[in-house]
Image 1 (spheres, rainbow, N blue to C red):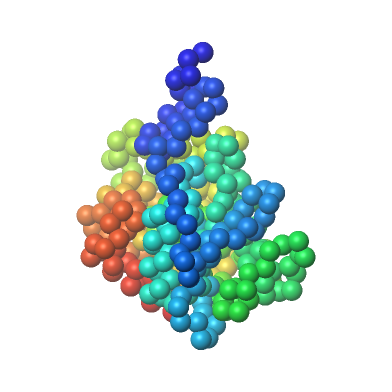
Image 2: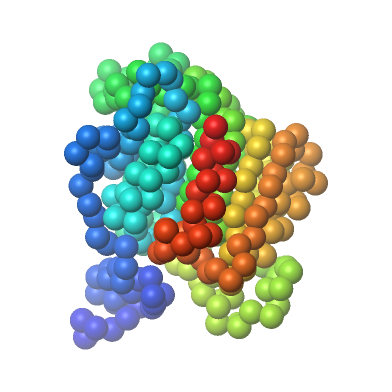
Length: 311
C-alpha cells in the first residue's frame, strides 16, 4: 500500500492516510505562555486534559471567570495556538477577567465525544477550587482560588468551541455544578448543523453542505448523524434548560454556518428558557474573521461587545 493513499480528505483542515498517519493542514503551531500573566496547567493525566490560564495585571478584587473553548472542527488547533493565545491575551486584558482556555483531545485519534467529556472534566476541576471537593492528587491553581469570582462565571468559544460552550451550559443547567454560578455564554460562529435544511442553506453549494456534515461524521464516527443533540441543539430535549440568564451569539454574513446561529437564537427564545439572547450578524465577513483579522473594525467592535457582556 502506498504511504500516500488517503482514507479521509477534509482539506483544508485535515487528511488521514490509509496507513493511519494523520496530517493536520493548519492549527498545529503553538506558543509558550506569556512571561507574566499566563501559564499552563495539567487538569488530568488520564485522559490528558490541560489548560492555559490568563490573569490580568490588575487583580485587586475578585474578577469574573471566563472558560474558553477553542475552535477547529474538533480536529485541529489548540488552546496553545498563537491565534488563541493572542486572542485571550487581548480579551483578558481589556475585560479584566480570569480565563481558563481548555485543551481538549482532538479527533480522529480521540473521536467525539472525547472533547465534550474533557470540557466537562475541566469545568469540574474549575469548580473544585470553590466547592471543597478537589482530590489530593489534582493540581490546584492559586490564580483561581485567589482571583476568580465563582459566582460570575462565563463560557465562550468559537466554531466547534461555541458548540462545546453551549453544551456545557446546558449540562450545568440540567445537572448542576456545585461551587460555580454560570452568568452567561458567548457563542461566535457556532458549529451547529442538522439533517433538515433551514433558512438560506438550500442556496449553499452542495459541496459546502456536505463538508459540514462529513466533518461531523469524521470526528464522531458513532454519531446518529447531523441531528445528534451534540451538534443540533434543537434536537436536545434539555435545550431549554441552559443554565445561565443571558446568551450572546455572533454570526458572519458570509459563513455557511450563519443560518444555524440565527435559528439558534429563535429556537432558544421559544424553548421555555428563561433568559435573554442577542444575536448579532456581521456584514461582509466570513467564519472566524475576528481571529484572522483581529484589528479590523468589526473585530474590535465584537470584542467591545463581549467585554461589556462579561462585565
